[in-house]
Structures are given as C-alpha cells and as structure tokens.
Length: 386
Ligand SMILES: *Cc1c(COP(=O)(O)O)cnc(C)c1O
Image (cartoon, rainbow, N blue to C red; front, side, top):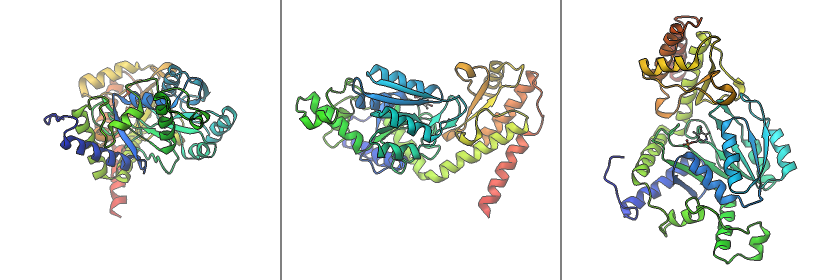
C-alpha cells in the first residue's frame, strides 16, 4: 500500500485491476464475468447490490438469525423494498426447508441471506436454498463478509446469484474495499434498469419488472460495469492503494490455496475450542452450525465481560469482542480470521484469557487450556505426516 500511487487509467494500474478480477473469480469459486471490488467498507458491497436490484415495491425476503440480517432489512427498506422476514433464535440457523417454504409463499424477487453471522458465530447452509431459488427464479444475494477466504463459499455450485465478501476479516487487508461477484441473472436486471434510465427500455424490459433506474449513483453497478470493463468509463477515482492491498491479499490467498486456507481455519478453530472447553468454559450456540472463523463463548456467572476484555487488551495486547442486543455481556466472540488465524495467536489468547479470568475471580480449571490446544496441533501434525 505504500507503493507510489498510479493514475487510474495508467496501463500499469488497469493491469492490476484486470488481475484483481481474475483472482476474485478464483476466490469466489465462480466463472462469473463480473467480479470486482467496490470502494467502501463491506456494507458498501451489500448496498450496491441491493440498490442495483431492488425497485420500489419489489418483495425481498430476509431470514434473520443475527444482527447482520437486520442490516439487509435496513438497506432494503431504504430502496423501497417490501420486506418479509423470517426469524429464528440467536445461536441457531434456519432449516433450509423453512426458508424454501417461505420463498414459495412470498415469491420474492430477492432472498438476502447472511452466510456467516458474526454476531452469533453461526453459519447458514446455502446450497439447498440456492437450488430452490434457481428453480423458482428468485435471486439469491449472500453476505459472506465474515466467511469469504476463511470458510468454503461456492458462488456457482451453490447457485448464489450475488455474493459479497469482506476485506478486513479473513482476507486480512485493511477495511475500505469490498469484493463482490454476480452472475448473468443479476446482470440482466442491471442492464434493464440502465435502459430505463436512458429511456430505451422496451415492453419486454417492463414486463420483466424493470421500470425505474438505479437510484444510487455511487452504487450503480451498471456504471461500475463501464468502469470495470475495457471501456474504462470514469465513474469514481479508484482507490489505488486499497487496490494494491486487495491484489496482494488475493495473491496470498491463492498462493496458500483455498482448500489449505479453509483447513487452517478449521484447525485453529478446533484448538481454540479445545482450550476453552478444557478451561471449563461453555461455548455458545448450536455446534452443528458453528462458523469456523468466529468462536462465541459464554461469560461465566459473576464475571464482568468488559473487565476481562480490558485486561486482555491492556496487558496482553489482545482484542476480543463482546456482542450485541440480548447477548451483550453474555458472550465473548473471538475471531480466528486470515492473518490472525495462527497457532501462536490461539495460544496467546488462551493464556491471556485464563489469566484474566483468574484475576476476575472466575472458577475455572487451571493449567489445562494450553495443553488441550497444543494437543490439537500435535494431532493435526501427525495426521498430515501420515
Ligand atoms: C463485518 C460484517 C459486515 C459489515 O462490514 P463493514 O466492513 O463494517 O461494512 C457485514 N456483514 C457481516 C456478516 C460482517 O461480519
């Protein structure tokens, strides 16, 4: 990122843009033509997609199993969607059949679904919902901000029409740019709305449901198409230094290999969980749908959640998260994402957490966490060597 800043139309820079598109397709496991970043934080990617798809009055179904489902609702409402929601208790995910039944009932234009709910540490299975959406001709938009490049997310195989990744999570570059991809089904909607805007829409376009232009300028994916195609029509000025970061982050992801990367996240997750359980802590949520990149643990009775976080931050230089709403003060959330998803980090967290909990008077099993975590790494090494 500290390299000299190139002009956005410098061939040296457009080469970087093209390479980013190629690497994005690989990282999203897609053959989609459209795979490019939006300048802004991850929610900019969510908003660009919703702004470009939703026309006032369009039905949008949002199954909510944590805080980021609400974000889809919030954005959808602002673009005039008729929102339908489904809810399930925090700490669980939906049975895909439940979502599919609701899709059949509501017949939405768009289903917006979070893949990994960072607020609860759960991960929603997508393949069955994707298949149903395709059969029922519904567009599936997925927020994979916190799982992208840390857990398997397959755009094509799972029939995800639009997929939004993240930067500062498992890709581990600074926040400020967001990768996304979308297929021809989404492209058709965008192109039709562009024709409406230019006053050249046909009856067929209107019959297909397109009667209003995209309402946002900054998030207009049709304008971004012109910018990210060989035409290179000016839209915004690309954030050069962020683009360097994205290029390098993707290069590292692909050098490691997606399979290896997903495996690394699973191993470190297993070690972290083993350590916390050995300490006598209770993990939060349904283990069957646990997200590998975030581990939620219940705060022991009588312990002040923020006091423990303060000790970790001020004395161990480790930051762990609390949570929101009903879970505030009840759980901690610990990320094992990208660059920080490493053995030394996991062991430091466990050591610090044990010390902090003892300081705060929690009754825990002392001296066991690190050994339990180290056992996981030893077993993993033995399995690899065999
Ligand atoms: C972090 C996160 C977001 C928002 O990302 P920003 O970069 O803060 O805009 C959206 N969805 C999920 C699931 C996230 O974890």
